[in-house]
Length: 359
Length: 126
Image (cartoon, rainbow over all chains, first blue to last red; front, side, top):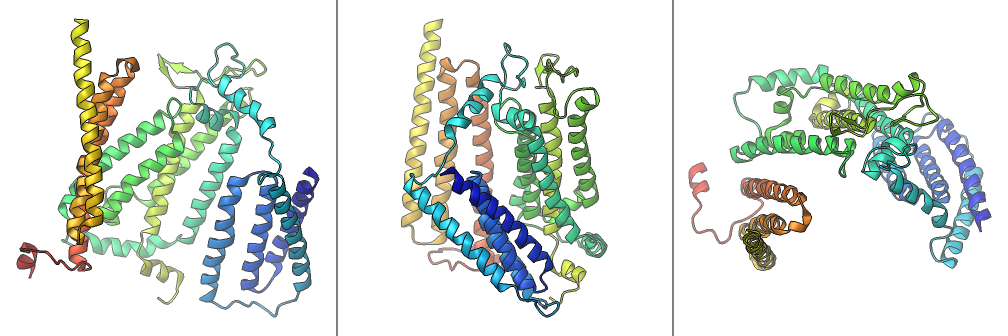
């Protein structure tokens, strides 16, 4: 029954394209949201067909549920018509009907063949065996990554390009968030000056503040540890960066965001650091390509003239480029999350003033 | 010499096991208290028992237990250090968490204290 799967894949991709076109062309905002949700449903069917079930489980609630609700809530505040609507109900109805029939067929087929449908488990298994037996294998140095942590080795060496795209999506999201709040500093600076004049201490009680200061240091140390040890123990750059952000978040809750700004967490600095981290990641990935190897090359390969990053420096095991990737990724992720939390912690009245919406 | 080290390991093993068991008992007591106590502040007391007696004590027990397990090699010192650090962090953080909860509950007046014998805060703040 592989044929049904492929038919459904092609069909859902075509429908996704058509629906995207209709979303762009429609004049009614509410209908655009509904069409966009339909498009997401078909796209998740396509993802299901290529057996990316974990992505479907995330994609469906986010793209169909949360996005639509947020957009509909935003539209409720404005007018939802641009111009008189041109009807194309029949096309949508036909597309949805055919899609529903195919989905029902696929579900029936899945249930009849043991709920999972077609699984390629036996085809994929040798890949896992390959990765586990070769990440740190001295006897086959043409395939090794010199990192004993198979997951980090996979993430930053065997499929480094994939990880780079994931990171790019993450930074795209941060850039989008910052674009929403782009002139907030101008309005918010007045408030910051007012707060600095206030003699009163902001935040929770003295006990909470004192302990939060200590815990902030501890969390920072643990986060740096996770990021720097990413090539040896479970963890890595993203995990380290995400752990680090708990510290500033704690300070924000216990001591107020103005304190955080006063000790140097400012938007411009964070943006600079984040960009530097991203540029460093790109440079580490591109240097082998400039010296004759291939992009994201880590160790020496017989078919590539580049000599590779050193697996250890002065008896300290660094696993070549994986250590550098982890460190720069940690910097970029930590500053990116800090930026988001700083921007989101600005009181509502200020960005409502910015967007010129009546409170 | 080696027999003395072996006996010391036995002692450490039993101390570790005892502390872990005490922690388990504290956890049971705390959960019963959390279910059976009548009021917010008293329940908070039970929750604190769970976090100090039921988390810090058994983690220190695990640290001592790891120290006695010679088959782990030098890794046992690593486990010992990590456990002690985790225990210290919980020891610092858990009381602050319950303090913040109690303070927020008192100041926002969402909880009406029923079984209060003497309320100094109200007398001071008016």
